[in-house]
Image (tube, rainbow, N blue to C red; front, side, top):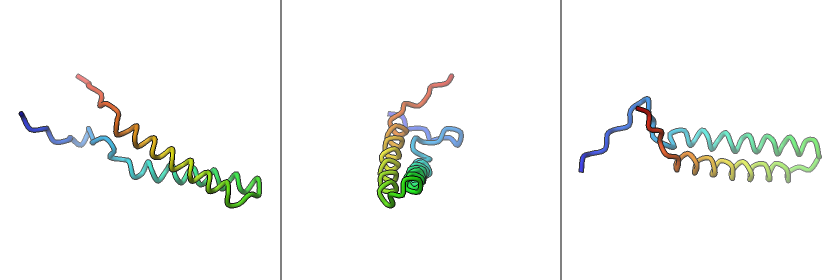
Length: 74
């Protein structure tokens, strides 16, 4: 069996930006939850729900990124 070729800089491995994606999803969810709390005066419930939804969205997007098939361009 031939060895696998090393990833090239123009073709990063899947999940290379997973940390940034995770952080962005959680921060956006928390900010939207805080905004909801600010408008509805319901602190901390909107923030907690926003963080939870952001965490779930981050896990979903990371799972999606890691399970996507690489494009075959010729």
